[in-house]
Image (cartoon, rainbow, N blue to C red; front, top):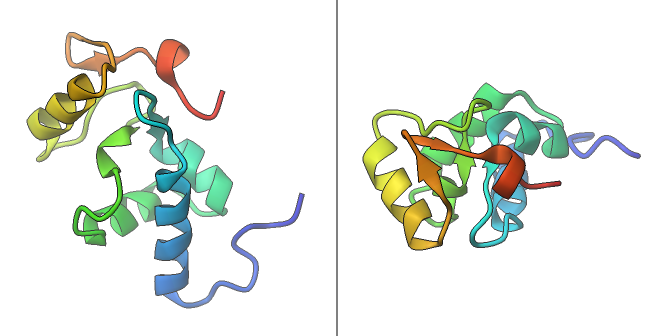
Length: 103
């Protein structure tokens, strides 16, 4: 498999790749910062940075931490949006085995 980040030196290019990957997460499913990063070829913190700049144009709320929790300061809103898509949340945590993407 080729490196999806190869040739991307412009931060905007990386951001766009992150947005494309997050757009691919189906409604009712979630992914992690690390999983999106592996798809794009960057680290999880770079994914978080891109999503913080996204302005809500992508379904950012479908990306959670590796332990299934939502990140502050958007935790309450994120869990509300996920629940609206039918994602089961228990004790503030998503069951990644049940709804994680990619499988």
